[in-house]
Image: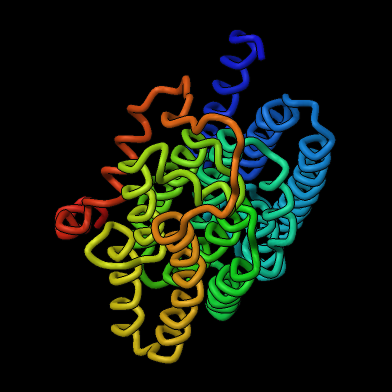
Length: 348
């Protein structure tokens, strides 16, 4: 892609998200979301592969549906209350419709079906943008509206997402689909705690972005898209294999890695709010996710690939990308747990 075009598209992505962050008016927020969607579509379709085009079409249709629902709900709210302000969501129908549309935008269960299919059709860097940056603007709106939404609806969305994210990833062999289900499960953790401690939602979102970035950049460096490919990485890049296994365990939420922090704080807060059953369901759903991360770790570190190749083994992975983003995100994804008190202080 032409670097000038790429610069325009990336700056439009930034502009759309910033507009949504800064807005208190539904029309402006909707406009930010639309700019965001339209800016990522050329990035998704840039390879002209039939699968990429199909993924782009699916993504466009789901995002356009969600945007139309937001527009309809905010118009309904303005019709009932007489103003477009986000803080004045007194109509329960409008607020339920908007939260449903935003759930569709970020891929919360049961509106998650587009997410694995779309991510599977994209290259890893565009998939990274879709899994991290594209979540920010809808999340800003969800956090602003959380108090106007029925708590039972948020709890149902959260628990269903963690369960679906855990179950869905068990049977997958494609790494991008596994990361899509991992994304759905993490979104569930963020939504479940939103009504009780919004600052923990932000902490969980931040940690998720760093861990997912580390996972995607690692796969990009080693050009891996299937579990079979992972079995051959250890001979090419042993250090990368070791850190990748740790990043995956961090995504699963094992101490003493960074990923344990949001899960620990969220379960602690749920217990404080006298919700032991919800906390138990969330903890058990996390075990489902952990199983498929362990499967990847097992494939990478404990198996030798059965493939016999007649060509010379490429002992070094060929890559042209800068290793700094990978190093930075991996370090943050592995070593931030001791900083928990400081992060909590900053978040509150």
